[in-house]
Length: 370
Image 1 (tube, rainbow, N blue to C red):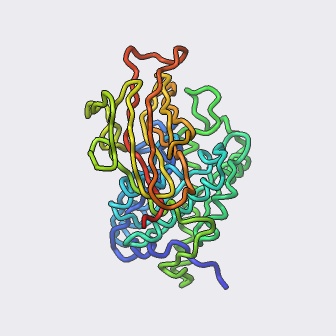
Image 2: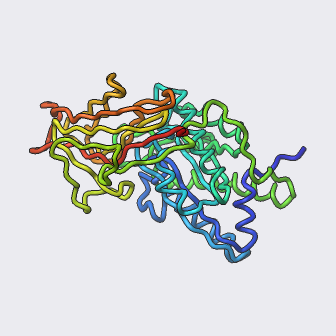
């Protein structure tokens, strides 16, 4: 049997003079960090431009970008954000890149749940979004992409081995990783300059054109193909809760206040800011819970208790400011649970602010309720 086109819905939208919305979901490699202009020279921008410039003149289709990439984000964190950042825009094709950011996660079952949650949300969306999973890597070796390959195969999705393409092309051209790495960072084995971005785009373009050829030959996967989960569909059912919007299940104690709108990144609606000693109590029905905040150099942690027992702290300290999500627990028994977060005093070593405070964007809950 000839290989099937695994993205038939997206290809049909393009060939039928329709509107194809392309979502980009991943971390800083998907944002395009390292490109001289992420809106023009990143692989993401190059792929969007390619689809429009190649297929619009021929088929009169329209191409739009949906930005769902957030730096330092893992797959199991992104699974909570699709309902806000991606699904409302009705994606037809999603390029998903998490191999590099997931490789350092010690909880591999959570990685698998994250990838399954992303795929299942996209494939069960109203317009049955097609998915391509990308395998990025690093200077000396590919990232650990075993789980991502398994998920791609289980769900019948293309897996684009971008790292292997880079290594092969560099070798063929007599070049090394030094030719594609960014020049203004030290010890950065991941992020790529414009030339590296171009090579990434070429790998993705090659896979897309192969899928299109299969479609035109009549070899197409069933449109609504969605098998049973490999491990769990827990993160297929994920939602965000904004502490700035009061609900009976959420209580704030202490001097919490809203951050100025100009200090709120695009991937949060609000930031709720609390000094050391401030507490948040949240009652929820679900099997997984997460917290999303703004990290910067203030030496703070959020001490977390779930049903009266301590769980891993969410660290809010980093050398630059950016949003970060932490999955505090998953695989919980169904039913009612209580999460309590307390802002800890700052570290004397790391705090650089006169009045350090924790900035919480969302709480996340996943799992079927009821």
